[in-house]
Amino acid sequence: MNLIIDIGNTMAKVALFNDGEMVEVLTESNQSLDCLKALCVKYPVNQGIVATVIDLNERVLADLAALPFPLLWLNHETPLPVVNLYETPETLGYDRMAAVVGANEQFPHRNILVIDAGTCITYEFIDSKGQYHGGNISPGMQMRFKALRQFTGRLPLVDTNGRKLPMGRDTETAIRAGVLKGMEYEISGYIESMKHKYPELLVFLTGGDEFSFDSSVKSIIFADRFLVLKGLNRILNYNNGRI
Ligand SMILES: Nc1ncnc2c1ncn2[C@@H]1O[C@H](COP(=O)(O)OP(=O)(O)O)[C@@H](O)[C@H]1O
Ligand SMILES: CC(C)(COP(=O)(O)O)[C@@H](O)C(=O)NCCC(=O)O
Ligand SMILES: [K+]
Image (tube, rainbow, N blue to C red; front, side, top):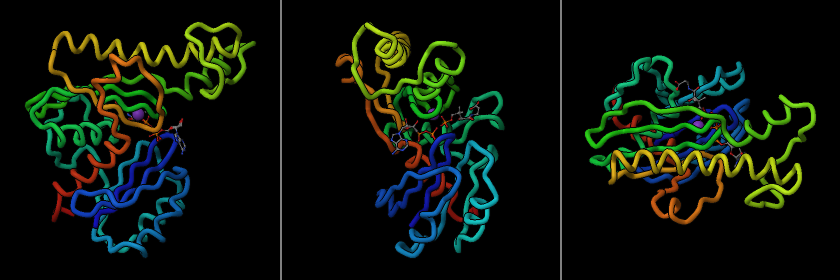
């Protein structure tokens, strides 16, 4: 079985895959990977992959080093089943690459926009020939809420829970609608503009943040919370025998 570890800026995601099937997934702090030991007792793991977009602390590094099977550390030199046209592959986030690999596995001959709503929102384009062209990075939901408080004198910290109006009627609803509608319009704007160029475009949405869309956009989106983990599993299998 494969152990898959995706360490993001907010959360670490850990999953077990058996022959392409995800059998268990856990979300935990990116400062401690306490679930590892128990998972390795529970499942017969043969190999693992780790992708991180942060510098890991000593404790996490020690836990990973203690794993009793080969571990592939995803980096810009890792062979991939897609072509990477990013001009600076050495600075590309590994979670972004993995999400693209996961989407391309499901639809190898299609043009795909992959949207990952986590700490940041990332937008990736991979074409029907399996070439990754790059994409964009914008602030994620929590970052937007926190930035409004941090960079103003009067705005409170608001979150998604509470009254949702199309247009705010007080400070709290104005901030909530501003953040949520802003993300919704940003995402639907990308989809609409890319669909002009690629009418058959497929759209994947992944990441920890869930939010609502108007139904016309929603109908064409594949929501797959585990796209990065699936992509990492594919990369690990692609590199089978090389670690
Ligand atoms: N169980 C959960 N624990 C923590 N965050 C969660 C959970 N469910 C949803 N979220 C949301 O998911 C976001 C993290 O998404 P994720 O894709 O894991 O980010 P990253 O990959 O950047 O660490 C958090 O900011 C939070 O809003
Ligand atoms: C863009 C990101 C911060 C997104 O991280 P996440 O929201 O998944 O935690 C991460 O992929 C990253 O650090 N990228 C490096 C820069 C780049 O991809 O070009
Ligand atoms: K992201």
